[in-house]
Image (cartoon, rainbow, N blue to C red; front, side, top):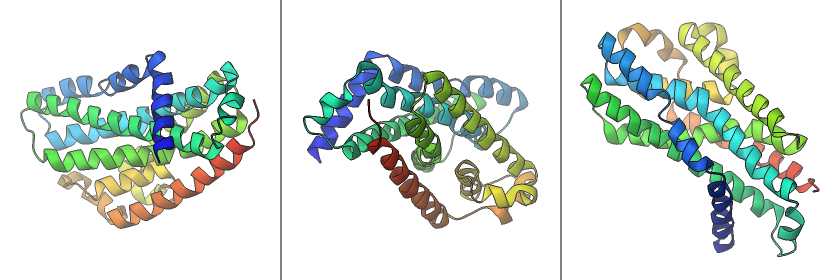
Length: 255
């Protein structure tokens, strides 16, 4: 356990030298600022601001950001030719993988909570902030779920072991496709419910919309939402399967 914690600390130190942790958390403020301006102008409620920030920040931007960070974490040993040295300590590749995934999980949760903080500031401007503790819980869970939803991209990054540019393209393409299906679910849930029920990013919105009060104009999506236990079960399976696949490919990596 202590060995894994030390590895996590080392991975954070690598990112700290690249100043990317600060940039990652700063990105959480990218959407709340313009969204607050727009919603204050239209006199929308805090619930709508929170949902809009979750859609744009957590479901659109965060998977791409996590993909970029993942490529940095997995390629640094390759670029610096240090993986062989690490393995002589000895440190198993499984522990190295879990340390990197733990760093991504922590960053994902911090990003989501930072986004909530920015949204709360916007809520004060909009004029209505309520249910802060509940939304904090939602933000923590969203951070965890988004990391799990990004695991397929991490599998590709580990398996292909290509350039940073390839990883960035794959990460944001995956994020855009998932976001597009999510938006289609919001407008016509019946048409995309089958695919939205198996892809991880749309699954998050199906759970989220069933976990918060919705205005009457969105009540048509309620029959297609899922409960928290079902979401936990699905995401748990996704997390286990894709972590095992990532481990399989990472163990075969030779630098």
